[in-house]
Image 1 (cartoon, rainbow, N blue to C red):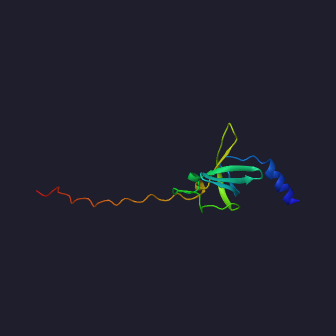
Image 2: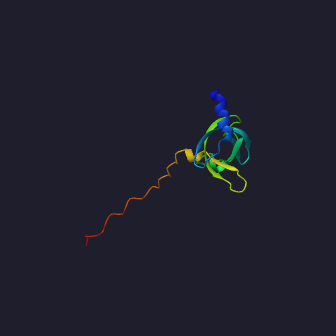
Amino acid sequence: MRKAVAIIKGIVAVPEVGEEYMGKVKTIVDFGAFVEILPGKDGLLHISEVSWSRLPSMEGVLKVGEEIKVKLIEVDKKTGKLKLSRKALLPRPEAPKKETAPAPPSTEGNA
């Protein structure tokens, strides 16, 4: 009975921007993957939203049927299409620190 209630709640649930979902990868395309976050509700995980590093392709990144955690970042007002992000849930990598040259010795006071 609990499983039936969960299925019904999933069907009538309305995806909310900012919420995190465990989704199943349904299809992988050149520009990303389509992930089902609720029964019958798929969203696009664009290649630029998979990782903080730039991915040259989706090859070998995800597998169909794999379950991943994603965040709903936008719902298109006209079409209702869902835009998902995985990188929004990953810690942002630190920018490489630039090495700075040591300051030259001060010449003040040396006359």
